[in-house]
Length: 165
Image 1 (cartoon, rainbow, N blue to C red):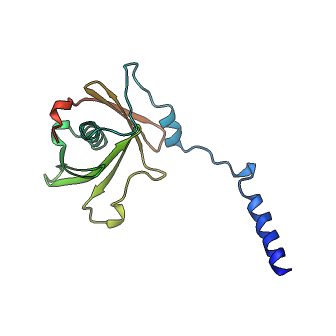
Image 2: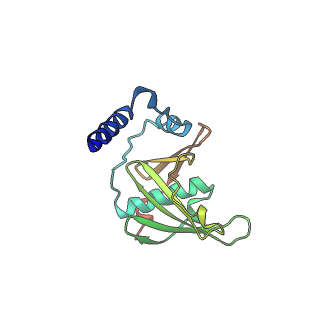
Image 3: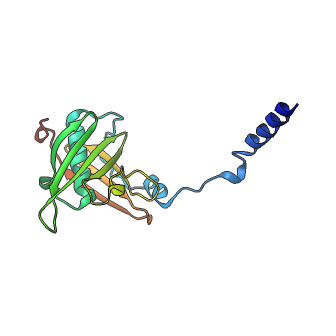
């Protein structure tokens, strides 16, 4: 009898989950990402990128995110579908390092070798900018939806022949 009562209470509790009052409003980042501007040029956003396109998208994405030129971004290696990159720090000339992965129209990155290990994480949590890409021939379009609801857009020419693995 006790098992039956416990099971009934558990079922009633589970049935209350997901009621209409549990809807979550989209965050400003999600709203901005959904409304992010795109040019009228033909764009490709394959779910899985070739090795060359992964390098192109990550170089362009990291350059746009960190306010760097494409020439500053160096791909230093790959760990499966994750690329390692580095660039000179603008303040002290040391090296900034990060990892990047991309696919399905999204760029996600992770800073490396930071003094605070809690900051070494993939930038894909609530409150992080959402970074989208579109391949437009030799150009990569990067659109960042920032947490305050604003967007930043950059077009970067990254020719496939520059990205020999």
